[in-house]
Length: 368
Image (cartoon, rainbow, N blue to C red):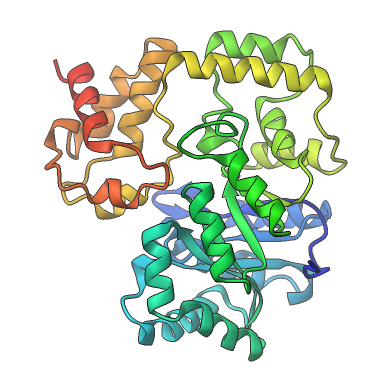
């Protein structure tokens, strides 16, 4: 399948986690990062209407689209079910996204966070048909989906909607054989249907950067390379991977990522063996596989900082730490025990986590 030749390299800037200062995007730092990214030959940027409560789109307008020629970058945005109720809502939402980003068209427009239930809403609201109309009008170059469900559901969606050109998948070495995420199986469905893959969460929300001591030793023994480099290069090493996104929140992360993706090399056999060992260590620790996308916090009626509390729990398991941070995250908000069991968080969780039960475990650990 032919994809826009504007895409220069297979490494993209995910704009869900940007440099922040006092609750706002640090636009001076973000502008430096944008410039550095482009200067090194990369040009793919990914956002969504809900990222950073809408601040991601406007930050891209202020730091990218108003400062660089339109042909110099590729911009992806998404249609999210959280932000429309009926078919009539879609076009006004789309136009507001163009305005927020300061562009006249999106290179890629994805039906966001697809699973079986959300796909039914997209179909009922004629989202695909409207996207096709927008494409005919020159306001979208390519239509795709981002996906969080089983390979069986993905197979059905791709059969139902042949107009889908690309699929964005959660894909990293820990989730590759995970029975819930089904990264390998979903990737294989995309290959079967000839759909290029865009990778999200290659470092699993940062979980594959700060590693348990035993896992860190495995990579240290290789004698070079950052933890992020092994994770991102793992994802980029597969055939059919069009793009690997990284959510970079400071210049240090960007410079590190550029250092190994500018002249990309697939993992060696020795590095793959090390990655497999690290996977085994993670599986043995039974960590909570939260990626800190924070969709759950958008719907929690009691304002529990769910991803932060899960990070505390993982910190306790990995480093026997986390208690101090638990007190910080609950100081001005709700504790894990304040969960009212409404289940809205579980309905929206891309990882399909049993959040209510996990919060009970967190409360038992930190609120004794």
